[in-house]
Image: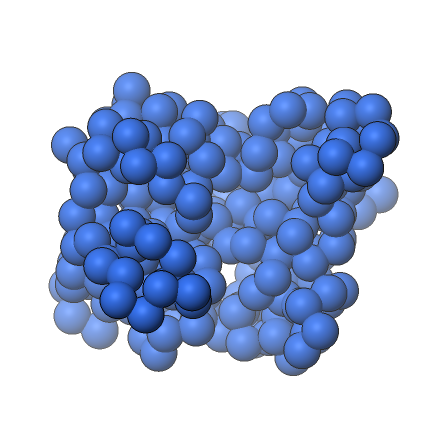
Length: 238
């Protein structure tokens, strides 16, 4: 791999990346595929922290929409992210990558509590850190958790790995002529109400000068190309 532009990243991965063909649950093979992409950049010298969503298992907002207490529904979603974190950690270990799972909700039998300085120390020692349970608080999305953790560990970029290859002016699945943006300002993304990332996360990155790159995880070599500085996906910046 050529010279690296980014040597410490926060990777936000949607839970759907671990789902099987039905889009639900955890498929160990899909987890292994995602782990392989992370392992490739880790072996090249990139320090990687990962925040996972839980859309393949449970979305707190969906539960609330069906009449559940929002705090309860969100806490269920946090627990679901821990299941995904354990699955991804298992896949990374199968590939020989040393991994630590940390959670914002204490559950010492399965993971370390999230402690910022400990997470940074793990990264410095060459371990991939997978952070589960979001921020530990209801009403905050895992996108917001990713932005917060990225700032705390001094990541150089927040990579939002999703199902589409960037930010569009319309849904590319239903609008074949939708335009993909190579770059957007934070304000432009907020004004567009970008669907692939929540506004709270974008605002937090804007206030702390953290660039966001939205890219398709399934694209071959996408993470390697991003950390080398290639203009992949959509860059959200000043």
